[in-house]
Image 1 (cartoon, rainbow, N blue to C red):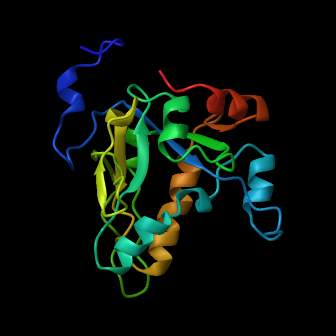
Image 2: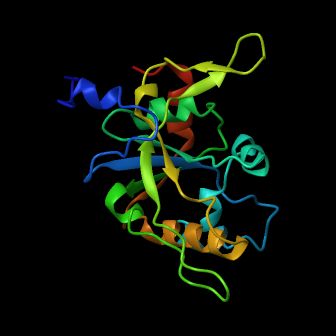
Amino acid sequence: MTSDGTSDALISEPDGTPLPAGWSVLRLGPQPSINAVNDPGHTLLASGKAWPGLFAFSSTERIAEVQGLKPRLSVWAESLTTLHQAWLLVGGNPNNRIALTLFVDLVRAISAPDMPGVRATPRLDVVWERAVRPAPDGTGSVPDDRPGSQGHCGIDGLCNGTKAQKGKLRELLAESVPPNGLVVLTDDQIVAFLSKPSD
């Protein structure tokens, strides 16, 4: 058992195994750019709401999608990874100031609807995914064993459908963030995160 009572067996589930029902996951992202004056994120952030851009693939994930792979959107199981740990694991970038909580059960209810000439997409899922980091020699990647890495998982299914359906999936993800599920990290929190290693 882990310190919070979670079974060790859950930490070592094979890649692609669904997370347990009732769990929540954490997603980190940047604030809207001050130069992107038309970004709807500015208006939505002011009202405490998430926006679709927070669920965009990273550059690595986009490359994988172009190559015909089906990357998952990186998230972290809140019962295994703290906000501090997740922030460091995704690079410790001071621009990553948005922290979102998503409920796995709500994510699994999301599907992009039928559109002209195409069927609805399969529902999204949240599954375990082994965390990796760049290899020290710059060639490929290696397993990430830093504190909190065992909580890494991914939202599966965002590569399905047309471009419009992919956009709709991200809209629905943003709408699924619960009230008070969006937190903007303060300067003091960023300094604290940078000044000490995670537990």
